[in-house]
Length: 470
Ligand SMILES: Cc1cc2nc3c(=O)[nH]c(=O)nc-3n(C[C@H](O)[C@H](O)[C@H](O)COP(=O)(O)OP(=O)(O)OC[C@H]3O[C@@H](n4cnc5c(N)ncnc54)[C@H](O)[C@@H]3O)c2cc1C
Image (cartoon, rainbow, N blue to C red; front, side):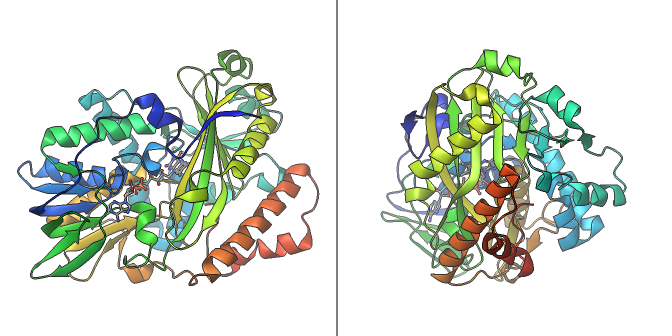
């Protein structure tokens, strides 16, 4: 099936309309805090810094353009972290997991309130997030999570739905039973990112585009971030470069694996959406490890993504992590299998982006030993909602303030992030495991047993303590 436009930046950025470019950093300047990376994490951090201390000199350096990375190209699922509650409990214990869960939950409302206050029309919709099973192997895959929430004493548990319950939200020949998390929302991510950028400019932060940080050092009672044409000397630094921080030379190197995810968006199909009853705008994903995720737009399109893109070597963010026609074909096959009414419809745009994946499948906030440098990484495909909470946390840490956010259990030393194998073994091993999981899940979807080699290899991550999926 043909795709109208296939590029790295994708539909949302085109729909939002590219903002006027900002100038690169061309001189040596000083700041209170320098933020490396202009995605949601960096921009939320800067927003909470400038909100708390309006006079603070906050400088953001972005290697490309603000919001043009994964933050402006994702599925727009603005989810709390309840889907990961069992993993949070496993890592931090019930009480601390509950603290993170509640802060992440609040983050959704805070994003909505920010958009409203700032007059940002980012299509914020408290739609809820439905997990559906699309094969017997996925049935009840959420049981452990619901049990963990029940054991922690939550009253407002996600709703378990039988086939009829799922069909009442959205009808697909592939859907079986499901679980509805009511707290989640959807957004148009690029509209939110560009609105945040504008709010920062208005608040007096200094933003520089096409200003990759190519050297970073601590010393002389501060930090210095060097770009090709200038530098920022600051008291504190926040590393928020996402996947870019996984490369050699950055303190997160060796603790993150680079996966990728790809999306397509259909032409406007309001009749189809009406016909399948998907009129509530719910965010939906299946329960595969290489998950398919999909949502609608206010103008009646279906956006469909798959987390099965290739593994990239080192901290590589470009190439097939962004544009991969063979993966895009698979995404379209999955979309048509779930929504046969899309057969023969036009897919107007396809795109992709890198996913920074940690072994825990959870984001990590790090306070580096000098107490001057902080950073976050590892959202593993779920950063839109949590990044606002993490931005609050990083801002409080950079200000040296002890509060609800700077004391979140997500704040750990960098050693707490499990090491991943060195290259080329990381890439090779990751590629083999990805292929095995894909084969196993394709067999499960077809209702046949997986071949024993794929079945065996796909168990390896679990055996060595890596969470794939939730
Ligand atoms: C296709 C796709 C779909 C996704 N869908 C969802 C979803 O539906 N819901 C969800 O919650 N999450 C989703 N995600 C993940 C989500 O987009 C991320 O978790 C989130 O955007 C992370 O934000 P960030 O600011 O940490 O990183 P980024 O958005 O990657 O921002 C980091 C920025 O830092 C810049 N940078 C890197 N290195 C340097 C350097 N050396 N100097 C200066 N700047 C640098 C980059 O150019 C980039 O702009 C998806 C991701 C992809 C790729």
